[in-house]
Length: 236
Image 1: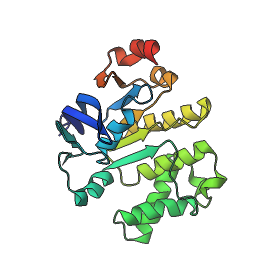
Image 2: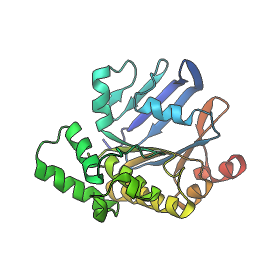
Image 3: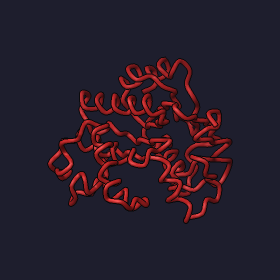
C-alpha cells in the first residue's frame, strides 16, 4: 500500500470555471510526502486544490485522490472523499458564533461521530496537538490570526486524514506566526505520516521546511529539481 499514490493526476486539464488554466498535469503524491505548489497569481495553483477536493470537475485526463476517481465522481461520494482529507484555508473559515470546542464538535458530528465522550476526547487530543488546549471555550474573534489558524489545523486533523491540503495557510500571518504554523504542519507530517500539499508564496518556507515543489507557470505545472530552491529564487 505504501507505494500507491494518495494523489494521482495523468494528462489532466485543470479548469477554472470553463477555462483551462493548466494543461496535461502529471502529479503523483505519496503517503508522507510534503509538497508545495507555487507560482504567480492566476497560474492555477488554487484550481489544482479545488480539483483535488472535487470542487472543480475533471473533464480530461485521469485523477484520483484518497482512492476516489475524480472522473465523473458522483455528488453523493464527494463528502466521503472530503472526510479522508483535511483542508486548511487562508481565511480560517471558522464559525464565528461558536466557541473553538463547538466548531470542532460540529465537524465531528457532521462526519458521523455519535458518543459525547469520544467527541470530547478527540477534541482534547487535537487541541493538545496544536498547542491550543486552553482555548477551547474562546470564540474565534477572541483569538489572534495565528491561533485561529492553529484551530483550523486542529479541525483538519479531527478525522485523522491521510492528507492535508492547505491553500496559502500563512498568507494572512506575520513571518514569526507563519513559521509556527509551518513547524506545526511539518510536525504533523513527520509524526503521523500525513501527506501535506500546500499552496504558498512564502519563499523562506521552502528553505526552512524543504519538500517537493511543483511550479505553475505558462499553463503548466511541473515538479522542480533540488527541492525547487534554485528555480524558486529566480521566479518567485
